[in-house]
Image (cartoon, rainbow, N blue to C red; front, side, top):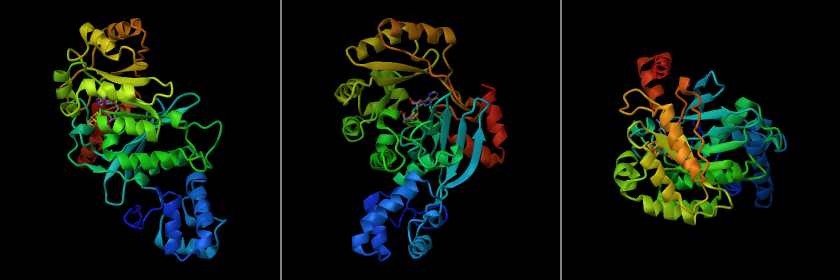
Length: 376
Ligand code: SAH
Ligand code: SF4
């Protein structure tokens, strides 16, 4: 508990579950008989009401509030930059206690919206078409740092106390920076808290975790968390996938698909993400092989137009090519939506997160990164 520092330098309670909160109360001398009730009250204030200070927690005694405030924090990470795209997408650059930063993105639609959360600073992996994969520095985010992204979005949307109906923030996509299944404990603890009905109260059916293919963790995730699953497939042959998605050198396509077949579906199809790279993975033959691989599996294919970033060697497939590819997949009976890029003008689209803002700040000019992105 004491290691998880908030931006104000005090240990943060964000990310603590009821048992963790009870332990904190024990440290502060709360009598044993009262700890579990007080822990439930604290839990309610932090995750249901979204309290940003202990002062607000009026069901706790003044004395206890003062002790909590002296030694602990419920402060959010520092918001370094907040941007809004012309399409309504919002992006926050957050800084944690050690100066490390991540981005998270809120993507609104008419009556709902999804928050795209990050799980690592940088990424353990180096997929060749992904901007995040070029970042040298990597550390796992703690559960509280993942959860804090949800709290920041709720703050900005004014959605406290956790609304039951009419909320705009309805979905979570674990598709930001990082490979979530290489930070299994962090993301699992965060999503358990996010789905707790006494707190943030998100439905696990409205959460989708995307993995590049950490095979040994896939079924475990399905059993423990049971959220929707998305797989970053991107290639249908091992030789090409080895190159594009290096984790494939360890776990091959066949093993990955076996894990998908064993995933506890609960009737929800698995989404296969497929980035469209001109002349690399976008031929008719690729589409036909994709259909063959998915045979017999409840699946949907999400075609992602490649989002360019400064320095990349790839180009996005043409619209005609994407349409032809999608048609082959659709004809085989799989839905094959093309993901509309959101927030490209603020480098918030898939695979564009973080490095650009880092570079731009070195140059002291965020606008130049935006302009650079707009040129593509
Ligand atoms: N790290 C996780 C989730 C994050 S990214 C994963 O790899 O699954 C969400 C999706 O965007 C992934 O399918 C990822 O491969 C894809 N992506 C990465 N860079 C991209 C880019 N430049 N253009 C389009 N999609 C990209
Ligand atoms: Fe990491 Fe996902 Fe980017 Fe690959 S695509 S480098 S796994 S963030």
